[in-house]
Image (cartoon, rainbow, N blue to C red):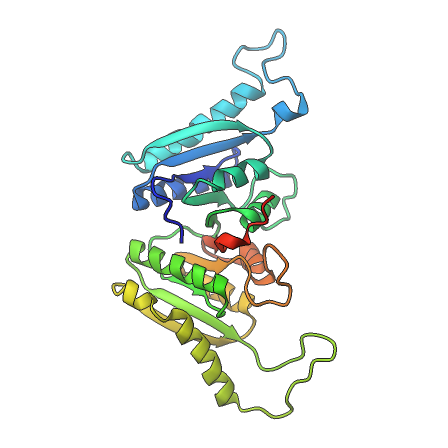
Length: 298
C-alpha cells in the first residue's frame, strides 16, 4: 500500500494508443484517490545530441522538441476530458523512459503505464519499458491491458509470502475504493520435485494438503477484513500453477493484483516468474506491488 500524502498519480506517455488508454485510466484513478495527476513524457533525444528544433527552411512548429510537447499536450487534454476535478500537469523530462519513470515512482502514489509502447517489436505482448519499470519501481505500478471495466471483482494472488501481504493490503484498499468484492486466489500443486535430489512422498493425503493450503490462504487474509469490513471477500483455492490460475481469474476482473515476486525458486529475480507471466497474459488491468525493501538501490 502507498499512502504518500499529497503524492500524485503519474502516467507515462509516448504517443501510442496504449499510452492514451493509460492516461484515461490514470485520470480515473487520480479522481478516485483525490490526488493530482502528473503526465510525463521521457525525451531521450537530448542525451543523444540530436538536433531538437526544426530543420533549416522547415516549418517553425516542426522538430523533435515540438513533437514531444504536442503529444504531451494531447495526453493532458485527454486526462482533463475524463475528470474536470483532477489537477493535471504535464512535463517533458530529458532521459531514457525506464530511468525517467523509475525516478518518478519515488514520489508517486501510483504509476500507470500502457502495456505496449511505440517499440518496433510488435510481437511482444508487453513492451520492454513496462516490464523493466514494474520490476524496479518504488511504488505500485498499474499496467493497463485487457478491458478497462467498472464492474467485476478485484482479484489478488495470495501465496503466504511477505510480498503477498503487501499485495493483499493494496487489493483490499482498491476493492473498498471501487465498491466491489475481493477475490483472494491461492493456487497450489500436488507434491512434485522442483530440483535435483528433491524427494517427494510416494503417498500423501490430499485432504490434508488442501487443508494446509486453505490455512495459508486464511492466515494471509487475517486482519484485513477487520480493517475493511465493507469489502466482501471470496476465497478461491485452486489446484494449478499460480500464473495460469491468475490469468484465468483475471478474465472477469476489473483489476488483478500481484506481488512482484513471491515464493518461487527464483527469488533473486526482480520480477518473479508468476508476476512476469501474469503481466504478459492478464486479461484485465494489472497492479504489481513491490515490497518497500525490494529496491536494489540503483
